[in-house]
Image (cartoon, rainbow, N blue to C red; front, side):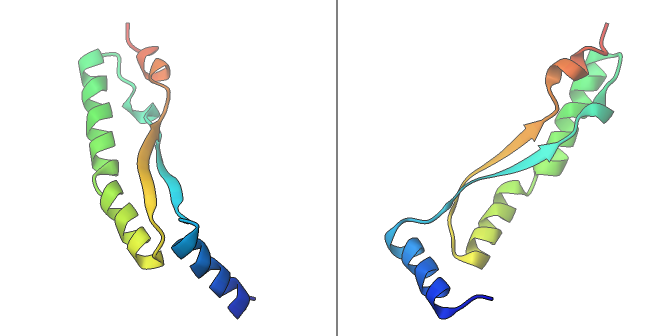
Length: 89
């Protein structure tokens, strides 16, 4: 259960000790982008990353605003490109 001491300690950490969230990461699997045609695979990868990560920064800012704690970095992590490229001739 949260008590007043914990709340005051958290406020102190935000105000005086610069409490923040270093990074939020969106993980995106690109395995469904595999295609024997390299141009098609590249297009699928680009489209998927743009579609999924379109609102990542805004969502991070909204979360930061809701909780009052800054989020410093917003990033994406994807399937290793070597796994996608291995399917191309």
